[in-house]
Image (cartoon, rainbow, N blue to C red; front, top):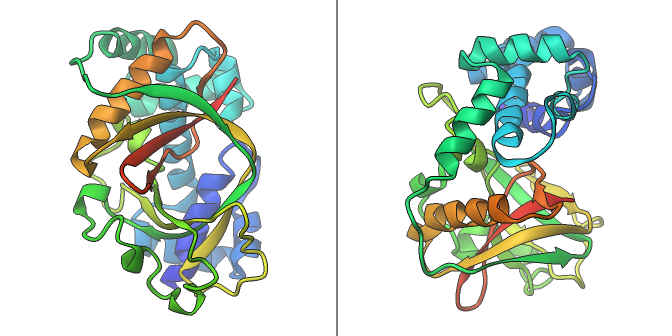
Length: 276
């Protein structure tokens, strides 16, 4: 059942901007609404509707801090089609209005500790796919990241087919963590997706995946790319990338979708998806 509830949690993440209800979620995973509510609460210690609002507000905090979108636009991006209901929910969670939160975070972010030695650039990628498995741990608490045999465990039968793939993690919570929008005391708060970034010649649509893995389509998009040498430098690279984006006077800004880290041949690469 936990695998089904993991799928439910991922579905909630992927549909934050949509007006879908628990009945839609139940249909998606093939359980009754009452089963979903009961099992979700047992796994995450919170009802699914409250969990969705928590994640919506975390995304809103990221967009307030790191984008020029106005508050009404951010509310819509996060599934709130009523500006006043969004503002009330945000104030209830963070004890600040969206406007005050933005002003406070922008002031803090524009006076960072310097991080030298990184180079960030804007790049574009074409349609690709990832095969991912979700773990409810922060990346620094996961042993084996970047090890191909760890990332494709249970995918051994596909090793020849996926031999050109790159090890990758996706980090749905790292930006919310950076702007202090996570509730650090909550259980299962941090999520890390581990897996493979498929080569452009691969397509996973016809691959039967083990139950814990899922396909993720990555449409053509722009991203901010920052390379670094050691995983311990991830948060320094993240801060540098955010400062780079905030300092640009163009239309590119973070989309709110999960950043990724790829293990390339001689270095690691942080990618933050952008919209513009």
